Length: 157
Image 1: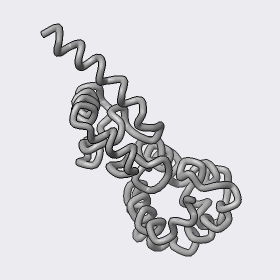
Image 2 (image 1 turned 120 degrees about the vertical axis):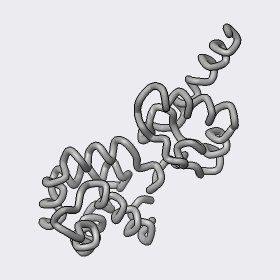
Image 3 (image 1 turned 45 degrees about the vertical axis):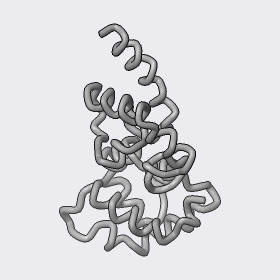
């Protein structure tokens, strides 16, 4: 029993290498499988599994399994929380083509300052794709945004 606890404690800090845009358990196979709930139980399981199976190390070195420094896969909790908390403001500023909430959102996406005007223009042009109905929410907007930005990786470089 004591050995298991020591192993768990030794492996858990490895999750800190995952990067700031990930849940507590970090990136890796369970992150890709959808285990992103930021509660201690699931994240302890995720961090131990990812670390012990080598999925996190492989993901970090290969840039897969959600372990990217920049890019769409790395969008996670911070971006989702920001989009949900500022949804109406983002919606309004996308129509306007800019604003402080949109600048903060661009920062979370990893868009460099010189690329922001181009991003804001793309968002403005794709407004109906990002918000297809009056009932569209922040997660729908983020999913549509991922699809749009997948075709424009230059905005995130």
